[in-house]
Amino acid sequence: MTTTATLPATLDDLLKLAEETGRILAPLAADVDAQRDNGHEAYRILRESGLLGLLVPREAGGAGLGFADYSRVLAALGAHNGAAALGYNMHNVVIGALSESVGTQLPPSAETFRAWMFDEVVNGRKLFASATSEAGTGAKLRGIRTSYRRSEDGQHYVLNGEKSFVSLAGAADYYIVVARAEGTEGSSEVSHFVVAADDPGVSFGEVHNLSALYGTSTAAMKLDEVTVPRSRLYLGVEGMSLFKLVREPHWMAAGYTGAYLGIAEAVYRCTVDYVAASPKRADSPVMQRDLGRMSARLRAARALVHEAGAHVDTQRGSLEANAMVHAAKYIVGEVGPALAQDAVRICGSAAVSRAQPLERYIREVAFSAVMPAKPDECLEYVGKAALGVNLYNAQAFEW
Image 1 (cartoon, rainbow, N blue to C red):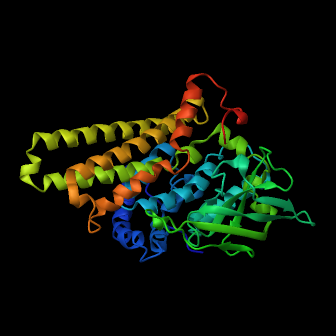
Image 2: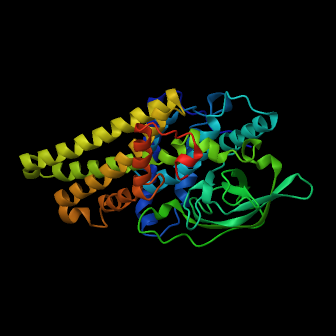
């Protein structure tokens, strides 16, 4: 097995690597968005860049980034290819939560599991994805219907069910599948399992015909008597997934935020370039005020995303950190579409021309509201935190 090159040691160099990788990904976006390509080439490029190991601890061969710096790297990628950045985030939602468990005393089976996954990412260049959402319940764990049971020999788990929206379908090597024990419908105890793309009984439907972000390669997933060894139970513990989400919701609630911040940055950058290309426009006080308003909104969103990330890194699991990431997700979801409206008004036909990347960014930035946590959920969480509601109680929020 070939070992990947060591990732840069500093954030500046990692951002430079992300920028260089983003420039390579950028030309692919138009063909993928127009469904002339399936988008898998973008994920091959991300594998080769070494960035799959961004969150893996340094002692395990990764870059060891925390949540705040990860958001910066993700934004750098999103500014060039939004779909690839969102797909890449699905990998890191899985790896980030695992990396944060380092330093926590765990049973030997969990240590073995973690070492295996890190090795698969760093040395095997394997791409992971999350398989959570189901029809009617979305990503809310309490409503999950996919089930599992122990095999007769007690050494395996057998999974059955359907997932409605699985990103990286056909592109990832492994999928982290959320399921509940058979006969426990309505229970808050759900578990995660690592399912390989080539495990017998795993199949995918056609990639969804999305109006934007087609490059996330999102499709339905079916699990028909899929058998996995006990060693592929996430961290070797059953029934703890909802508890983990309630305590530390940042990956589920706000992992996407950096990508959408990057797309919003691209909307602003394209608008500035349009105005700057004409001396008449550039000298107009009206245009200057318009760009100033866009810049102020974007700066405020960026500052909140960075502050929320810093809270996660220093106070992970605190109510303040959890409220901050929900606030950041909400604000980015508001600012991005507002910038898009400004861009349409300022750039006119240039904003709707398929020949220009701005048209794609405008479509993409609107979809922040679709990704969990949704705007109303973010506001409800922040409001409950302000009122002192115990958000560590799994019954206090509709997970």
